Length: 68
Picture: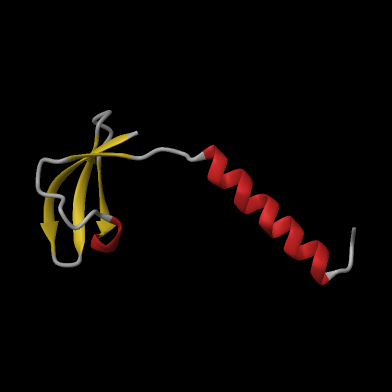
């Protein structure tokens, strides 16, 4: 998914969805500091990182509940 930074308002970036389906406010902390109005940001799913996090959580839960 691509979003375009339309403008900055206070602590938010107003972004437009590339598909033209509307606008949303994103907390400015989620926007790269070097980003400017008109910049395009790509949002992707990191499947490898997701799998690692799930495995880590599973391992922690097993340790907590003494499961092997």
